Amino acid sequence: MPQGKDFFFYGRRGASAVHERCKRMQSIQIRYICDGEQCVANKRDDRVRAVCEQDGAIASCTVYAERTVELISVTLASQTAYEQDDTVFVNGYQSWTYSPERAIDSVQRGLLGLSNTPLGRKYASASGDYAFAPYGRKGCFHGYTYGYRRRADRLLLVGSLCDREGFTRVEFDTSAAQIRLVRDLQGKTLRAGESTLGARFGVYEGGYDETFDAYFKDLGVSPRTDEQLNGYTSWYNYFGNIDETILRRDLDGLSGMADAANIFQIDDGWQSKVGDWMVLRAPQFRDMKALADDVHARGYRAGLWLAPTLCAKDSRIAKEHADWLVRDPRNGKPVLGAIAWGGAYVLDICNEQARAYLRRVFDTVLNEWGYDLVKLDFLYSSCMIPRDGKTRGELMAMTVDFLRACCGDRRILGCGVPLGSCWGVFDYCRVGCDVDLKYRDVWYKRHTNQEMVSTPHAIADSVFRRHLHGRAFVNDPDVMFLRQDNLRYTELQKCVLASINAWTGGVHFVSDDIGAYSEQARALLQTVWGGQVGRLTDARLRGGVLQIEYSDDNGHNVLCLDLKTGEICNPV
Ligand code: 9PG
Image (cartoon, rainbow, N blue to C red; front, side, top):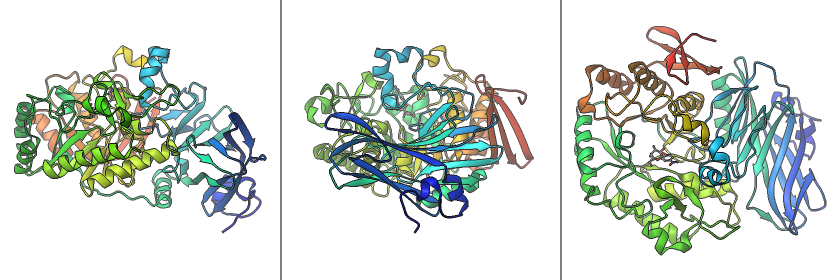
């Protein structure tokens, strides 16, 4: 294997195509704290040094310490030229984070308007990377784990191979003409003589599918299942206000589509409090096992929603086990992991008692009640604060591995989770934000964060993260809506959402009472569930117009959608 501190970064040797592409990787910066002082080393100083090597298409960098240091980050920067028509894709921090392909003269927004005030930051920053990543630099785009620059039909994909040990922020900076990899090592302390991986990544050039195939081959990740889920989730009609009567009615409705459906998933609202999973919300819920039994009697898998790393502020768990909560090291107060349910704290996955509690919860849900699939939500909360000698990436990987161990071979649908931590571990995963009951975003959406509920965003997320489907897990694009009531979509908007979900993912849920469907809605659902929908072959987003190319029985087609309004329009 070729080795040497300068090999990869200055390209003295080797002639492989990848090596040529990487040879301009020009600078390495190590940020760290030593004796209470923040320091930056350019490649090395008398306390830390970075040593880089390359093995074929894969490059890595190891950081060695000569003194005890608290690492912050390692940044690798490479010069690269951008052209006017280039676009970039950066994979947003977690499932819900807006992740479109972007024009290079656009601005990546962070916390917007009202959110970007001290009070707003306190609440809105829970779901994203706002507390530890830079925003608002024009022409600079960042995401996590992987990203690509696209020129016509060719991608230059940069993908980290070690994000389970620490997240890698991938930055495309057009003003500095750079691609940067910033490895987040906050939480990691090295003593004299110790070392850690500073980065490990591949650079891939070629067509869309070709580059993603190569990346996932190097990752060694393959999906656990290819089974499509067709069915029902209870969230997107009554939200938390469900009860056994509504669920049994909707289960009856689903049974009218008996052969095509395979799952009935109960979402948030069954538990007394988030965190108090073994106490049901009474009187709406009396018997979770009986519900699962009814679902099974119809021949479907039973699914149940939990947010295992959270507990509502007013939950028993939060009150009785204050020592299980993740605390802000600056003030000792419990960290807010979500603003829903009046605010929720984070259970510390490093705490052995908290882990034992969660094992009991999953044993009850899976073995006593008999659920076949769990939708595990708000998981990003587990890694908000680096702690216990672990980076955010390590905490997230440890969390998903723990959850997998709790669930054995049962199906897991991940949600609100950094994607690079859970591919190959979860069977299904949400790849976008929540869809809304009206197609068009309401005005205040312009004032929140990048994880907000938004149908236009969800559509773009499904389209531009389609490469994960069948490589990382089965993509969940979130629900489609085919019902008439409690909804503000035109028939066309419903059809567009259903088509995009069908083209890009494999979790095809509705939250509707299918029993009340029109013939037309029933037929559309049958088409999506039957998988007779064609294939998306290319997509572009320019000036707010989403141009999608797809092939189906009628040949090759182009759809131009004004993303904001959900109306069909002319190409730009
Ligand atoms: C259940 C829901 C559904 C949905 C998930 C997730 O307040 N918030 O910031 C907030 C964000 C996301 C969210 C709910 C609330 O949605 O994506 O499918 O399961 O939780 O609570």
